[in-house]
Length: 136
Image 1: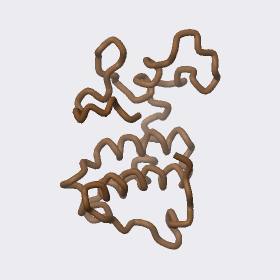
Image 2: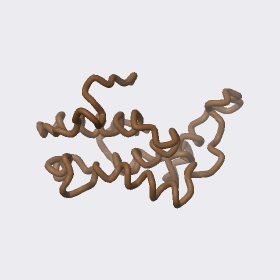
Image 3: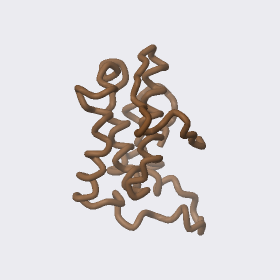
């Protein structure tokens, strides 16, 4: 989810009725066009798509974003990692723990850091290799 690009992070989770969405899944569902029958646009089976055990597992995978001793630590004071972490847990869960999904989120955070003149070296030969390309 990208928000409305008005520079105010506090209103990026608003549903069409003006209320804050309690979850990313419900936010997306609230903006679905009426009468849409595309199977990919149907409401999530559960509000968050994952149970507590899933969230714990995928939270450990995404912890690299918020770790104070991890490769992104130098960026934490410039770009808040909280939303990237939440997005990471949600997306990685939705895709069943696929490393490519994790790498995509990490790349997004690295790019946000780079936009603020903070370079983060987080890839290596065995984790999210540079040669891996993502469709955006």
